[in-house]
Length: 253
Ligand code: APR
Image 1: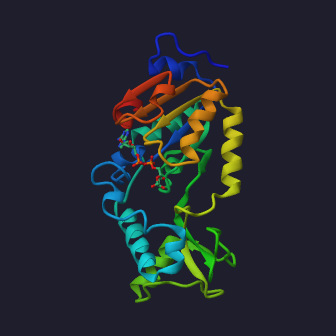
Image 2 (image 1 turned 45 degrees about the horizontal axis):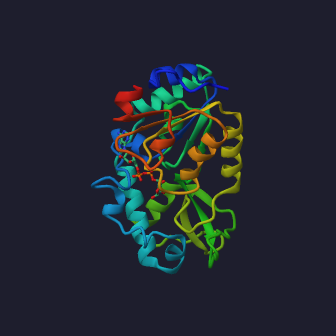
Image 3 (image 1 turned 45 degrees about the vertical axis):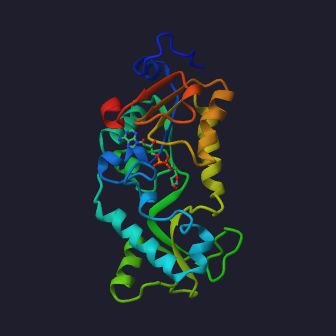
């Protein structure tokens, strides 16, 4: 177990951690050109999150079209890993980190070389069948899955609402939307990393969305030292041993 750092500097915190669990949010990818959600100009300042729920996706072809537009904008950024992603991958490569739990859907941690990445909100890189009328926020698909470019190709060929080629069901990005059931495999993997960790580092998250917003609280409840690196204050700063308000790339890179 790592004792809280005496002089509470991030460098000491990271030096003391032997099995660091890193928890990231959209803020770690903004320096790669992907906007976050709640900062000025963020995604939720341009799209209405109340429309971007699982049920609205199922009900409305218009919402599905808006979601595909959002997804295409996302990929248009042509994002590459930045110094923050690379620093986190290096911690794992040096045997000092058990891995990353990320809320991000961009795959940049994997591209940066991180081997253990739990994508707790899924991934934008693939799409899948969710069935014709899934209910209670639970996909009920036939198993069809494809790279997201499959959907973009169908849309470019004139089909604004690509349906499953196998069963005719709805097709959705393999992300977890508001109101959608969490993926139990990912949740179990996150719990396993938490059980192994001796410290937690949060990078680039407003810590407002559960279940992730509860993870630093669980960590502290378990006696783990907590560090938070975020451009702005978060609601959990008071729980952290170390808080750095700054850009992830500058602070970690
Ligand atoms: N370095 C450090 N922090 C940054 C940087 C940066 N370069 N850029 C932005 N930030 C901070 C912002 O100040 C903000 O507090 O990152 C945080 C990002 O917060 P959100 O935009 O709320 O993103 P996130 O916490 O990942 O949101 C969680 O909400 O809408 C859902 O599914 C979506 O996964 C997302 C979830």
